[in-house]
Image (cartoon, rainbow, N blue to C red; front, side):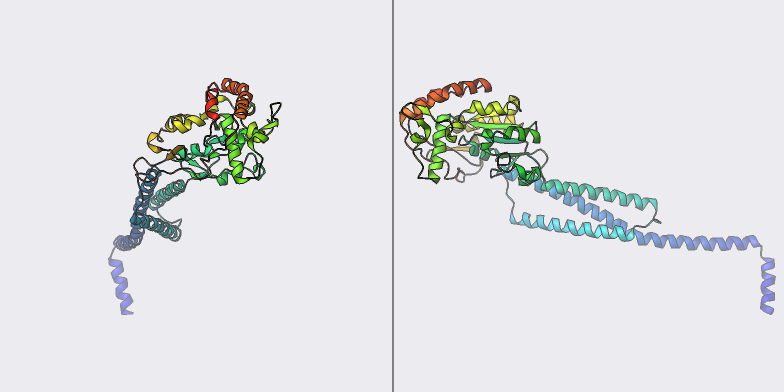
Length: 410
């Protein structure tokens, strides 16, 4: 009783206002220390976020550097060392681990009660991560439908042209002939697109299938896919082209009749068999008429197969201009092989052996009766004149009649 009596006397003597201020001060002090403790617990994760941001930015720069080296390597000027390959693999793994840890931290730490400032910082980090993901995807490229196609002609020099174009760093092309618009159209555009190589922004996707030029449905089908597509046609003296075509078939089927037998329905009467595919392909004006129903000449570029052999750099300059490419493939990339009779590709800064086309190119033609060659020139002459008029180019095949009577090469 004495204790309660003394307490009562004390509280009666101390003003209530002082007690209220004392109690409030204690509460504020406690709240302040509580907030400081909370801040310290959040401080390390926020710093960790900035560390992750720094690592991601550094890795993004690394990916850009690798892409630049890849671009240079396509021109034969840079090669990866073993150390760089190891560093690249390590970088990708570190990036994946960092991204996983960061996302786990965001999921465990994020809550509705967090302050506005940390929330903004987390949003900033998410934006950076999203941008990096886009860049990484772009490094690997995207598969697209072709923006340019070499549509013909068979045995005209299409493979040589394609291989020369593939030297250009802004050209990605399918190595094999897809034959989509003539043999595999029912498989659909998704199947066709999946055949294409991945390309980065600014690169052109290409393919070549020479049989398109003589396929009736190809112009309409290609137009329905892309009406603004660019078409390249490599043409060659139709007589030489027919002999080259026959030579290729003969190498696979030695039992076939002679060229002279296949070329005529009745040799005595001089009736040429234009239904034979080796001869029909060379009636260029007939096939071009079908393409001009769907595409203007401004979307077509005609390459001279003869000039592609004697002046590959000159023809490549025109092709690169047509495709809107910088003239990177020049005369420094070619070396004339006297044995094969046509140019081979080489790296300008490399002293290694030039890369030539395979054994299927450069076969020696069989000897053809000069009278047969003369008759074929006469047969093709009106069609050639029509083709010159349609394209606005004179390929001067009539001047080669004498040379075509002698043995030549692919």
